Length: 394
Image 1 (spheres, rainbow, N blue to C red):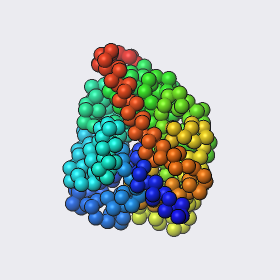
Image 2 (cartoon, rainbow, N blue to C red):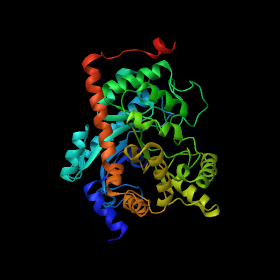
Image 3 (cartoon, rainbow, N blue to C red):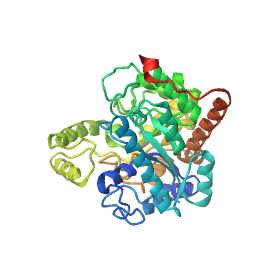
Image 4 (tube, one colour):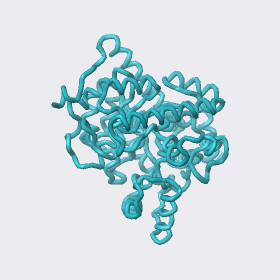
């Protein structure tokens, strides 16, 4: 058999757990959650990276759907938008229950795999979604959110972002209280998007494994969104997982500079640089015609996975594609059907079936289960915190 045949065979037994897919935000932006207008039971390749047929072709067995909201939404407006995103995921799992199974635990993920359905979990992308409220954090957990990315692209009151000017120096005292409450709930601490100082502070503070839901290796592509090697080297002691992303500007140095100029072009025409609506993409394509885009490939992503495995170990790696949250994708990883191409590339590099099973399925399931175990212990001996940012940070 070819490496690609072997990849499909492996994914039938150990499907991909993908750490981050922005389909809910794409549905909000494109059709304001009109699921008839973007029926993912039909071919959506003209509009989206994601539909059910391509998820099946890609060997996806579990998906953390991002319930992201932009950082220009603040306070209660951010909370409300996050609730709307959660409702979108609920609508999806109800509408497509033959294919998607709502999952809140590691056991739910295994049940979905046994049924041949895709375990559907949620991750909130950015601590602005809780509006500095531990009670809101707990409410999101009760609604099914199983990780929270501490920041998005901008600093928040209690944590520094990778792509903003340092302000807190990492986590504030309230930020450490947020991490503690996440540990107590069983919500995974997601360190994608955060500054390296915040990564280190969170690893110091967390008594449960952390995740990077969609980040690559800074040693391979020196972008602030990526994870420094010294942080990767701390994952074995923590038990966490770094889920490598496919976003070209995070995996290919030449693509980083190209994307910076393309984003400036969008902003010059009045668009947000993360806008992936049809109008924004038309501008992107026009820019690309006169400024050829450097192409990342599955091999580019595999270089990051090789480094993360070397630095952190095979028990601490995963995949977080960031589909429908990026304007561009690598060749061969064009949409959610592309995961077998990555697995075939790794097979060609000598990765064993056992190592690949950890990458695709086992590590992510283990980490969620470990967070549940920590939470059970903490809840048996500690009380809920109602601390406020005013009390802790002054």
